[in-house]
Structure formats: structure tokens, C-alpha cells
Amino acid sequence: MKHLFINGKIFTSDTKHPYADTMVVQDGKILWTGEQDAMPAAWKEEIASVTDLQGRRVIPGFVDAHMHPVMLADFRKKITIMPPEINSIEELVCAIQKKRSQQPAGVWIQGWGYDEQGFSEKRSPNRYDLDRGCSDSPVSITRTCAHIRCVNSMALKMAGIDRNTPDPPGGEIERDENGEPTGVLKENARNLVLPLIPQETAEEHVENLLELGQVLISQGITSICDMGNLDTGDNIPLYEAAAQKGFYPRVGVYYMWDFFADDPDFDIPQSRMDRNRQIFAAGLKLIGDGSISGRTAWMSRPYYGSDEEYGISVCSDELLESAIDFCKKNHCQISIHAMGGRAISRMIDRVCRESAWTCENIPYTRIEHVTDPSADSIRKAAEHGISFLSQPIFPYAESKSYVKNLGEAWLKECYPYKDMLDAGVSLGFSTDAPATYWSDPTDPFPGLKFAVTRTCADGTDGGQEQAVEIETAIRLYTIGAARAAGFPDTGMLTAGYRADFVVLSDDILHVPSEDIDKVKVVQTYIGGTCVYQR
Image 1 (cartoon, rainbow, N blue to C red):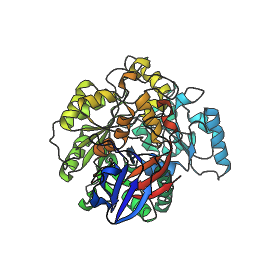
Image 2 (cartoon, rainbow, N blue to C red):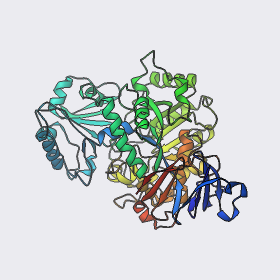
Image 3 (cartoon, rainbow, N blue to C red):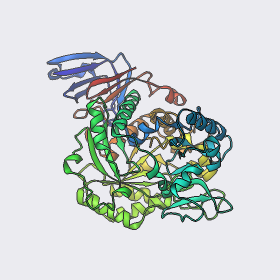
Image 4 (cartoon, rainbow, N blue to C red):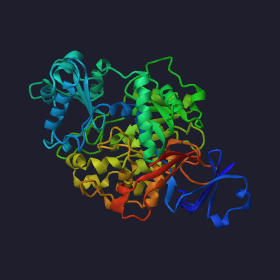
């Protein structure tokens, strides 16, 4: 039976037929989209239901093609170190003290999301700050980029980290002027304490995912990519269990290769790679460098205020080659985190030597973040079908760190969306939540706002010449992200595509650009079924 949706201001994300007022849906997919007066007679037969969209703007469901949902779902239970809750190190100390008062000594206290430029003190917390919050329990807080961890003295002692501990490959134990660890552990050094931190049970993960799933659909997010955890766990069974209990979004799962490369028995069954499943295995994830806000992204020129500080390359040649070999053998995607120009060039130059090894319409390589690409890297990506997944929320929310680390002029050159699109790059948007310095890290609307205005949350100019139109921004968060990540039949409201769509409170195509982030989701449909009603 067919289901008819009428009286909508439908933006399809299809450049050939961008607008409509009527959709016909059957078995979860769109049969026809267009103007009701032009609807073929055949589609008017056997109509099971008619839904009046009441003249509201309708767009495809958002595809957040880069996030860490299991991490985010668990982090939501921890101290959130972001505005408006926490704006200073002193407020963080108080939050730790409060958490300690609610649990016994010796139990881990965890937090996430800090950015030193967001603190009134304009510096990173250290072990001594955390000690003031609690000295009789281990404390671990993660920076917004998730590439830096700060721990207290008790956690350092438990991990055996002292002045004589060498930096691990691809990591740094920050030290003070006397050579003592400050408690700040960068890149691979952050993993030195990871084995000591208690992990949630599978049941807790599932329940946390269910709560997060409701948040996602309330924001119009209907498909996501899980870009891996910092452990050897397999997230697919967690999603499958959550789906049985009412987790609605479709999920492409990537495995963090650092934690599986040395396992000779690691394999991804071909049945899991069926992208028509709600939960499917998409490929491997590699980390090529760090973050701009943490000054660890591997840049092509030194950071602002330095002549020698270029960031950190954190991926060995051996790890990169083994990942490429695995993905070629299994015909799955390789996803590579690369923010800085040097990291981007290194990774693109390497994968360009390969022929595409994935099925048609699935990019064989994804480059994540792509903050400061060279014109040569952009050209090569377009020529070789390499997709870029970017997070406009980063410069929008982290402008203070970007200005401090890059300077105002360089910030404007970052995230050159218009140049990427003009070159023909397959580009998609996402959030990288929870590695997002925003109190509601999965909300797509602030990212859309930045892409259109290129104005940061604090008013900083983020590079006006790289602004895109709102219709383009929506395409990048729907069909653009779906194609870059390899989601089949997703991201457009046209015949043959999944009936995943969102009804909005306001006409996002015509509201003032500064009000884009005020638009709310009224309804979310997945497979033509309403799964969320505001």
C-alpha cells in the first residue's frame, strides 16, 4: 500500500528536481516526488494513508557521517566541561569536588569536553588543579578534540607515569620546567591510563545508546557513522541490541585500526558489510595527526607564534600500509583522520597510488576533517574519487583556539568548502561528536549556520569567501554526507531513495542566515514512519 504526503515545502537535495509539494512512499522508499497536480494516476491508487505536511519545510534526514556515538552516549553520564555549565578551571574543580561527594574514595571521576581557550584562565588544567578537586580518587578528563587527556596525581601514579617515563611513539607526556609530568597526556600518550579506567558493561552501553538515539532523531539525524572507539571492542553487537529496543538511525561502523592491526585473527565477515543492513561494517579508521585546537595537527607551516612547531604525525608507515592492505583485500573503505596540510598531503599522496578497491559509488578513501588542505591535495582528491568529511562546528565553536593557534588570517583559509566543491570533491558534513566544543554536540544547525555565514559563534570572521548557500549546506549534510560515506539510497527525497525526512519548525531556506540555528525539528520520519514528534 502507498502512503501519500501532501502540502509540503519539500527540498529534495536533488539538484535536478530540488522542490516538490508531494511524496508517494511505499515499503519505506519513495516512489514519486513532485507537484500534486502533476502526480501520475497510477500513484493515486491503493493509497493507505494521507499525511498533510501543513505547508512546512521538509528536507532529507541529516546524515552525520563522522561521530563516535558509543563514546558520546557514555560521556553524557560524565562531567560535561563546556559552557554554559563550566567556564573556568575553578568551576571544573568544584564540579569534581561535587562528584567526589557523591561516590566513595578510589572510584574514578571522569569528564569530557574542555577547551583551554574556553576557560577564563586561558590555560589547560593540570594534575594539581585536578588534585584540588580530588586527591583520593583517580581523575581523568578528556579535551574536546579527544586527542588529549588530563589526569590527576593519583591516576599518574596508578599508570606508573613519572619523570623517567619516556614518551610513547606518536605521543607526548607534557612536563613542567623541572621535568615532572603535568598530567596532560597528548595523542598516543593519552592511552597509557586507558587500561585502568573502568569500562561500561554491554548492557550500560546499550541503554546509553537508546537515550542518545532519541536525541539524534529529535535533531533530524537519521543515519550516522561510528568512527571507532579507543579500544578493541566491537560496537556492532551493541547497535544491534539497541536496534531491537528501538534505536532508529542507520549506522555505518568503522574499526580503529590501531587496536586491531596486531591481531592476526581480526576479520570483518562479508555479511556485516552489506550496506542495506541497518547496522553495517564500513571499514577501518586511522589517525594521521592531532587537532588544531590542541596544536597537534600536522601542519604545512608552523603554528602561530612559533617557528618550529608543526604538530605531530601519529601514524606509522607500517600501520598505514597494513590498513590499506586489509581494506583492499576486503573491499572496504579506509577512513583517515588528517587535519593539517602535511598529514592531508601524506595520506592523499599515498592512497592516490592505488586504484579504487570498493564497489561503485562508494569512495575507497575518506579523509576526515581536512582543515588546511593544499590546492594540490584538493585536486588529487577530486581526480581520484577521495571523499572529504568535514565538521563546520569546529571553527564555529572553537574560534578562540583557532585564532590563538593559527592567527586570524590563517583561520579564514581553513575549511575551504567552496574551493573543494568547485574542484569537484565529494564533500560531506558531520560533527565528530563528542570531540566537539559545543554543549549540544550533535546539533546539525550550528554547523549549517557557519557554512552559510562563515561567522564563528563569538563573531570572528571564519572566511566569508568560502561561504556556501543554505541549499548547498543542506545537501552537504544529506546527500553529500551519504555519498561521501557510502550510504546507499540515502540523502535525497526522490524516487528509489529511502523515505528518511524531517519536518522543520521554520522555512530554513528563507530564514535570516543568523537564525539558522534557531530552526527546530518538528517531526522525523525513517522509512516513511514518524519516529519523532516534538
